[in-house]
Structure formats: C-alpha cells, structure tokens
Length: 224
Image (cartoon, rainbow, N blue to C red; front, side, top):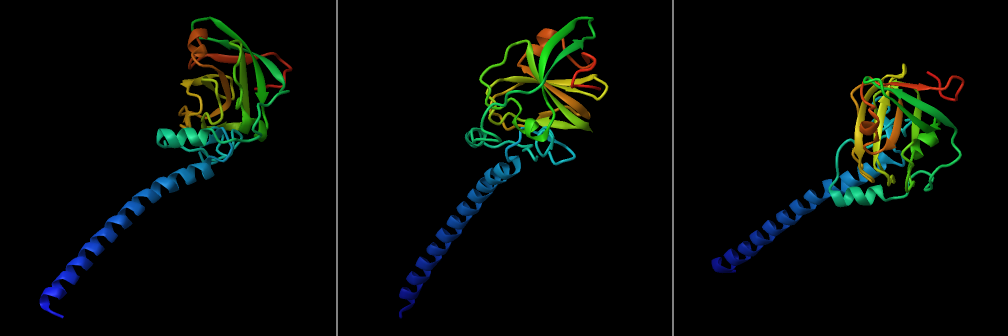
C-alpha cells in the first residue's frame, strides 16, 4: 500500500468518524425530549391535582394526592398529553351539593352552589370532560388537611378560576383563567384545605379575593 493510498483511507475513516459523532450527538439531544414527555406522562398519571407533600397539581397523588408536572413541555407535546383520556374518561355526576357564600373585604357577598369532591377518585376527575358550567355553579375540593395545593387542566375544557381556601374559610388567593388542557401546575404559596373552581374571571366579577371569607349552611356535608 502506498503512502498516498494510506492517506486516502485514513481520510475516509476520519470523515466517517466525524459523521458518527454528529449522529450520536443528534440522538443524544433527542432522547431528553422523549424522556421528558415520557416522564410527564408517567408522573402526571390521570390526576388533576397534587400537593407539595405528595409530590407535586392539586394534591400530588391526585387532588387528594398524584404527581403532577411542575414544568412545561413544548406546546404540541403538552396538548397531546392533555388530550389523553384520564381517570374515568367521563364527567362525574351525582356529587353532593352545598351552598357557598363568600363575604368579601368590600362587604359584598357572592353566592354559589358547589358540587363537593371529597374522595381521591373525585379529586382526580374534578371537572374533567365538562363542556360548560353555569356562572352560579362551582366545584369545591375538600382535603383532610392543609397543604400547598397545585392543579392543572388535563382533560378540562372549561377555563377556570381556582380559589384556594384555608381550613378556617379564609381565601388565601385566586389563580385566574386557567387555560383548558394546560399541563402547567398552578397554585398559591400557602397551605389550603379547600379549593373552589369556578368559571374564568368570575372571582374578579364577584369580588372574591385574598381576605374573602367562605361560608356554608350549617349542617351541610361541608364543615370547617
């Protein structure tokens, strides 16, 4: 073999090596994206809510307690994940109802009728698959203790306000206009025992904000 032939072969081998390195780099870059989507799918499970203590959106293992993603995927992946059938794959019905009143700092009073979600399976389904909700209606999530709560909007088609309430009935904060199908975990930086979901922008219209007091009829299924 001549030195010229050896040089040519070495040159080809060098180019092949560069191509192999580039290809391996591209594959390595793709894997974290796939792993991220898989991790969210596995971590989010079928819950809508999660708690900081359990892992978190809403009650980390479902509103009562599942891991919910705290970060963001690219828009396409987030929509695909949010559209996957979740717990039960149907809107829940037949929940008990309670009258709720919010006495606001400005003296106004907002009145709603709320469905009560108090079990883990009810927490996990929440308002999933509902196509609409009347302005004077709500859903209240009741937990056993006070923890930081985080919620997302998987399989939820109604834009919502989320009102976070302490065990004493004091509104801790409102997270407004949660977008349908969003996987972004949202909550307030304070431990809540109750979370009330109402139509988007209704909290502002009704005057419900931090410092409002939630009340219900005595003897109802909801007590605090």
